[in-house]
Amino acid sequence: MRIRKALTLAMISIATLGLVTPLAQADSTPTTRELLDKCNNGTDSCVFHPASRREFGGRRQQVGRTTYNCSSVNQIQGISWADTDGGSNSLGVTVTAGMEFAKVYSASVAVTYNASWEWSHTVTRTDNLNTPAWGVGEIFHAPLMQTVTGNYELHFRKPFYGHYYWYVNNFSATSPLPNDGSVTFHTRAMTKDERNRCPR
Image (cartoon, rainbow, N blue to C red):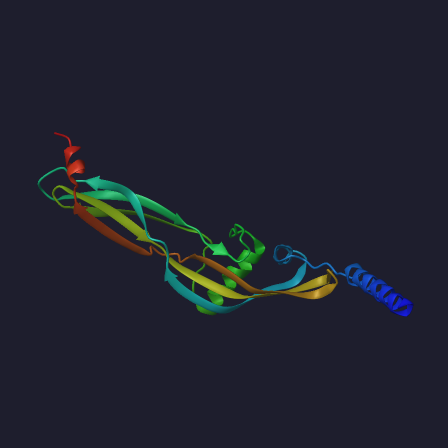
């Protein structure tokens, strides 16, 4: 019985000591944002290698004002509107065109896919909206979006967190294409309540 207790205490002591060693040897590594902020800012080279690209329609929303035709004839009205659409990225932070890693990304997309890249885009237009008698007219806009995914390769002049070479894999960003996207017009008949609010 004494021998069994002694062996048990020895095993507990060994297990306890074993828990300390890995914690003491833990190495720190840079965050993705730290690495990308170093792009052409302490590196010999910073390159983005695109791996895939896809286009898709963005969220559709009303733009400009709603027109109400309180008359018995069709009316054509010029409606001026502007719509700014931004994007998103795998970092979950706001990216502007002036950031160095954003410049590298945009240039690489342009060369690889022959496609322009903007981190945000504003469409400004004036459209003629033909609203029928006793009708309501609306204009809707949906941007055409693109997503590009790839990897950053960074070469440092001096060791950064102990290494000359670092990689940011599977960086992905989505942004509107620099065009007007989809613009659609919608008309409908006034409701009874809307018609009652027309000037008399």
